[in-house]
Image 1 (cartoon, rainbow, N blue to C red):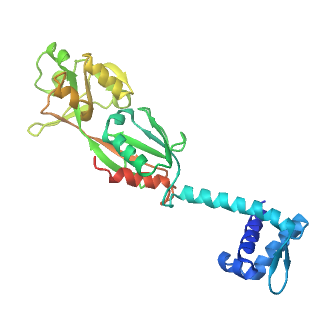
Image 2: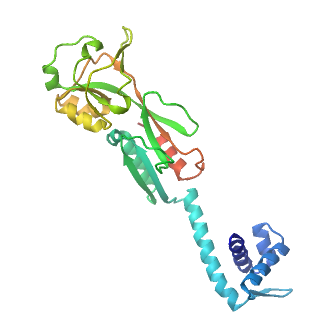
Image 3: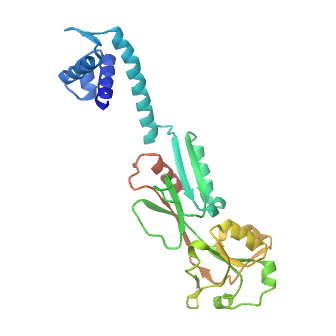
Length: 294
């Protein structure tokens, strides 16, 4: 079948150029090879496709019928190749993206919107989930990760860092005793993310040694947005991305616990399949996300 498709493509190019020599020049084959492929196609079909003379080629009625099918095949294949490579001026296609749900509230979603505006013919399926998804096994083209200490790979790129804060509602704090050091928080009502609950939380101070706290867990979930909503309702404290708390801090509903102590930052990076073509849609998206100012 592959040989027949190749012969049909050679036949169509020959008719387009009107000679074996013209087709041979474009396809980088010799005229005799072009003639051989068309003869084989005629033998396979049992019909004559072109009449040959020393001066020109004349297409037969059977050749005209085959030419219509061959041109439809070439147009479809060439069009799909242009879309897949993303090298056209107006690239099109589909991309599947996985990223943590909490980043729906971050500037990363703004950069995705910017990409959609710049490339209106590229359709996105975006999975906002705090359950880790795998690129190959789960069928994603790009994955956005957010980790404390990510490993570096050739098929990944850092996008930005996220400051974390220990957050609580003001109502909850009014019912707690005053604290001076991170270890004083050991028995408070902690809400923890399940992927990192066993690691403990490190606190850094510019004048004192780093302290690590392994808190008592009252609530554990893989959904940071749900935890933030619970915190806002006064049920405890949690270490969460700072961008979630900006509005609550400004209106006086939320407060930072031990604000002089800093937590380890989260690193947000993009990962893609190692075999992704350098000029395809995946790298078009990766480059766009990397150029955005966060």
